[in-house]
Image (cartoon, rainbow, N blue to C red; front, top):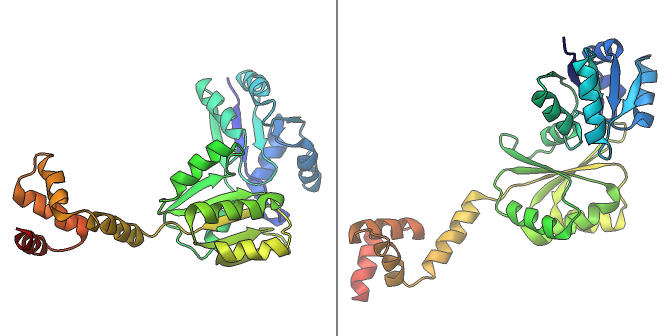
Length: 281
């Protein structure tokens, strides 16, 4: 009978956030797969966990993933931990989960801390809808594409960033997306936890002279729907009215339907369009 893969969330800073269930599973598992064994050994020692540990990270995830799957197929239970937080979120854990499902191995999650959710709830920005982007791509061309996609994202955006790249990333966000509200969250759950609620431009100015410390989570305001609608109406309004009408007539709409669509595009009543067309004749 195959073993299981346990996705064990670990604290993102404060060790008191460790759950009883995770401690138990880490003690009962046959093997712990850790993103960085040097970091994880400190956690295991703190909770007096003696289970054998092996490394599983970005650079060995394929070969080590196959090995771990073989171990589970042989009946062993394996607990997966990341450096901090929930495995599978912006780390190679997602690869192992996919390999397990493909191999018919049961995967279960032990929920706990996740930096993205912690920051989102602390940000003071809308939480009902959000887009998690993790770290922006290092490749410049790919990064430009992602930023272009985010330009019209109406959901709250959550990003990760290292302190030495923070200013550059804030500058790139400001240039690509324009001014937005932002919460820069640092040292989450730790003694010096900081939630800096500000704007992108002010954040750039501040961190240019105040070097940040610790990993950062950026929670960024999404694009305003009303602003987007106003810009769209402005673009349509700049088109000559007859040309706007012809645009829909050429698509097969009759004159009445075309006027209705034109009115909607421009944010006015159909009566206004009818009157304007009469005046142009």
